[in-house]
Image (cartoon, rainbow, N blue to C red; front, side):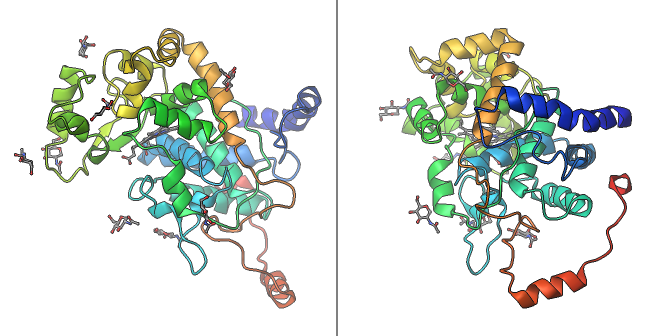
Length: 355
Ligand code: HEM
Ligand SMILES: *[C@@H]1O[C@H](CO)[C@@H](O)[C@H](O)[C@H]1NC(C)=O
Ligand SMILES: *[C@@H]1O[C@H](CO)[C@@H](O)[C@H](O)[C@H]1NC(C)=O
Ligand SMILES: *[C@@H]1O[C@H](CO)[C@@H](O)[C@H](O)[C@H]1NC(C)=O
Ligand SMILES: *[C@@H]1O[C@H](CO)[C@@H](O)[C@H](O)[C@H]1NC(C)=O
Ligand SMILES: *[C@@H]1O[C@H](CO)[C@@H](O)[C@H](O)[C@H]1NC(C)=O
Ligand SMILES: *[C@@H]1O[C@H](CO)[C@@H](O)[C@H](O)[C@H]1NC(C)=O
Ligand SMILES: *[C@@H]1O[C@H](CO)[C@@H](O)[C@H](O)[C@H]1NC(C)=O
Ligand SMILES: *[C@@H]1O[C@H](CO)[C@@H](O)[C@H](O)[C@H]1NC(C)=O
């Protein structure tokens, strides 16, 4: 394990320099961005995420979702991490996030370790992107080189979080519109929805499908009746809606293609999931069929779409900042503050071996 990381570290710059020459046309982001300024970055992220998973197996799913909820609101700029302050209305209390965002503490743990190893250079937005990739990989999903160099926002926008994040009761047309608004197409929609191959949901987000779908007083007709009975046991009518259930009833913690075979068997948990297969004549059906039959096709597509999502509205160059603490924008430094910070600086602790 350690030697693999060492080799990866040494190769990092070399490989990426040539990679950069070959694909330089593309983005402003670059997987080699921290090669020189924070060579242990990926190792630190992997170590903290892995350690967290030992007591919280769901953390992988939660970290993937956190990156998604960052990117769809003002772009991938770590705006989702900002807490309420005098000037910030946090996105964490927007409807799609309130009482359901997880992993914020793990991100802070990563940031603390990263600041010790390489202070003031790595953005919280990049940490979210790296944590999402590591989580996918650790769950037996694909791995990819994460383009880096994002900077952190100075603002958050709860209104925009409520507007931009798709809801579980969305129809296919609404889902497509929400993704198109982010520059993502129908293939990206079907592919990224495949992240519902792991993680959990609260009953409140789909309970209408069990008892009173679309005000019919009946269950959603596209819901598999065996699965319906199982869900009814977990989510009683008029319950609090706070019980949790697996998004993927077959392999709840594994990143695989079962999400798509579930849809074919009427076992999509959300209406937004099942719509991809059960909307008559939809152009998404053939994509679901393809992914359910071909793991490589899904994994290859997932890498591409995650990188595409990770590029949404990124801040680079001198835009934004590198936050010192992910939950707060940096204090404006007057000359006096700079002196105080400089004199307070603590001696650097040991390298990553102390993690
Ligand atoms: C297509 C529109 C989408 C809708 C309507 C949607 C909706 C939801 C909802 C309602 C939950 C349950 C939240 C809770 O009960 O706390 C959830 C969980 C989750 N979503 Fe999505 N989602 C969508 C797309 C995505 C995308 C694009 C990703 C990532 C690429 C993603 C990743 C996840 C993961 C991993 C979980 C489980 C999180 C956990 O267990 O902590 N979702 N989603
Ligand atoms: C940010 O706010 C959340 C509650 O919304 C709280 O649990 C957390 O401790 C806060 N983080 C910091 C660093 O103050
Ligand atoms: C978020 O959830 C808390 C606890 O359930 C609730 O008290 C609060 O009103 C919610 N906030 C918003 C903005 O909906
Ligand atoms: C949040 O986004 C909305 C919708 O784009 C915009 O009208 C509003 O000015 C933004 N608010 C803040 C605080 O940036
Ligand atoms: C819900 O009902 C309305 C009519 O009341 C109908 O137009 C719509 O297609 C229905 N939606 C679904 C998903 O069945
Ligand atoms: C939670 O699920 C259990 C069954 O697993 C059920 O007995 C209980 O009533 C549910 N609670 C709520 C609040 O929905
Ligand atoms: C749930 O509430 C509805 C309307 O308030 C009522 O008609 C129904 O009988 C209740 N169901 C149960 C199982 O309590
Ligand atoms: C519903 O689920 C059951 C059990 O997983 C499965 O055997 C059956 O084929 C499914 N029914 C449909 C219509 O897909
Ligand atoms: C959608 O985007 C993917 C990349 O994510 C691309 O390969 C594909 O050609 C696009 N499809 C359409 C119909 O534009």
